[in-house]
Amino acid sequence: MKYFFLSEGWAIGQIWTVGGLWNEIAWRRTPDIKKMSICLWDKNEQMWLHRVEDAVLMLEIYPTTEAQQSASNQNIGNVVLTRLIDAEKVLEYLSKTSAICQTNHT
Image 1 (tube, rainbow, N blue to C red):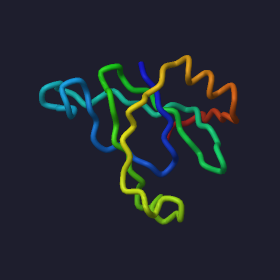
Image 2: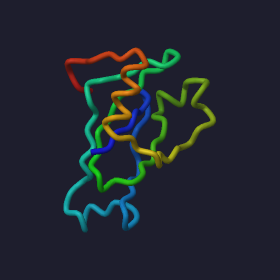
Image 3: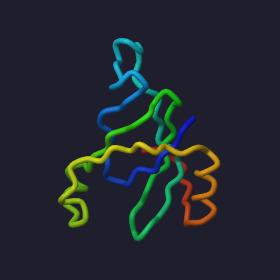
């Protein structure tokens, strides 16, 4: 498994694998991406931990309409995450910052 943190108010767009864009017809399913019940706070920004299957190489993320209303997100259209992290790196981040566990998923 691989992991990434995604700020509250951001959504996942296109997904890439070794052969290019994820093709639901070829794979016969959507990629396995799960929002975990752990978030970090960084400068008043809530960042949720997500788990993704190993076949995923990159993800496009973009701010939702609500997030675009924030002054800090007004000039950002989308971002491609190319450096997904492993469980060891997640634990390192969690040990260095303020993490909150939630009991219900959103």
